[in-house]
Length: 349
Ligand code: ADP
Ligand code: MG
View 1 (cartoon, protein in one colour):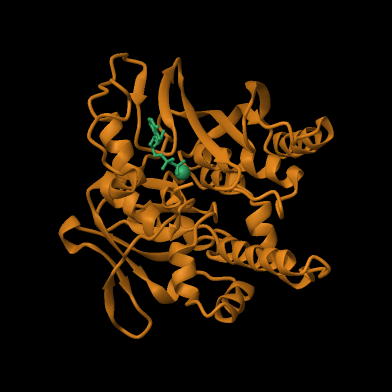
View 2 (view 1 turned 135 degrees about the vertical axis):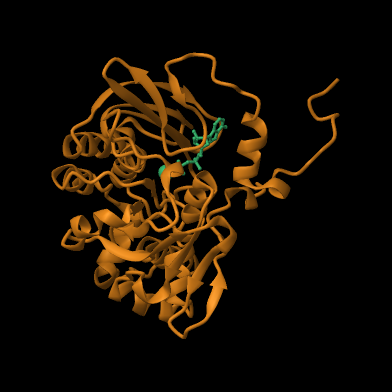
């Protein structure tokens, strides 16, 4: 029997998260050291006095990055940073990475050295060690898989599942800029393809482009939490968009939430650019993704600890599950929040 003779359910019908749920259900954890498996930003493994955190990500050329506008050095940097972000999202400290890649013959040694220069820079800035990987050929393009390993004090780990009604919902920085950076790059790419003589002037959009091409993970915030003796009740990093990632917290914690539209931080350049693209700035903040800010909840009694924290914004509250996940608009309306995060399965090539 061929692998394709069976009943054919299109993966788009399920979507990424339902597919993961369906494929991984029934994998019960057998080992006592496996504290948490699938379902959070990183797996948690007991290891002596601390816990190990493990997170992995796969980046595919043409789906997650476009080498027409992503310099290889930036790409190497970003590939590491997005993985480290998942370790920080558990309130942990990344320590090691492995880097695996499948590459086609279009890549020169020099190009790959550029890519590794970016990886090295991220290792330096985030104080992590490159400890291994794998290299193989590919019929087409570049595929990168990075695994990050970190540690966390057993009492300090934050899961997606710890939010409870009454908790305050916070975010660590502005949203939407990375998505708008991507829109600018896509627009310039089309202009260039139509007229290769044109040199784009991207100087004015520096912030938006940097958020897209060279994002940072919130290492600083984890330090600030430690200093303030604050342990969030739940946390996730914003990779798919505020709406989608808030839904992950709500699902894992079996709670609802509301977000005040007027409290969502949006950078001014992002706001202006959204309007230029005829998009609602709020929609780009809710659904744009790739911001790599931390979305977290805290117990009400910890409110004083965050009041003066730099770049921490209160955006809403955790409520009972029955109350749903809602957006309180500036105009006084209440809408159910919809997630339209990245769905890479939309691409059928
Ligand atoms: P993040 O956006 O934080 O990287 P993902 O949405 O990629 O998280 O993954 C959610 C959870 O599903 C994680 O625990 C991840 O390890 C797990 N996961 C994703 N894909 C698979 C897979 N193919 N097999 C097993 N687990 C997976
Ligand atoms: Mg994550």
